[in-house]
Amino acid sequence: MTPFGTVVRNYRGKKEISIKTLSKAIGVTSTYLSALERGKRRKPSKKVIEGVIKYFKLTGSQASEVRQAALFSDTRPKIPSYAGPEIFVAVHQLIKRAQELTPSELAMLEIILSKNDIRSSKEEVHKYAINY
Image (cartoon, rainbow, N blue to C red; front, side, top):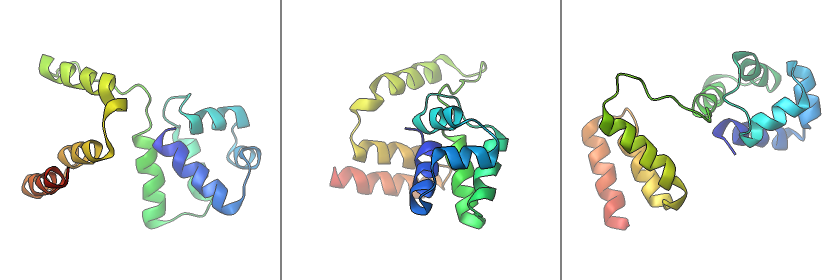
């Protein structure tokens, strides 16, 4: 399941809203919304994202959570053509081995890849490495 699918399913569960009800309210088919939730479709359209936000009356950090989840839900991310060969290799290795990574390893990767200050990222990775 994609991050967007997880977020939408959680909001639907909290409010006890069916896929059919939500899909009708935001103007898409229930089949399409179900496929988005399960990661069987690429990232959701702006119409779907904003429709979910409006339907659940989300604001501030909750709306940002939905938009961020949608951003990270593209099932076929693209590597820019100007990227060097080492980036292509790293991305393909990550895709190939992602299922083998432990939660700690995934957390370390997330810290490294976040846009936080590089020093704090190194400190966080060190904390995880010690506990690993």
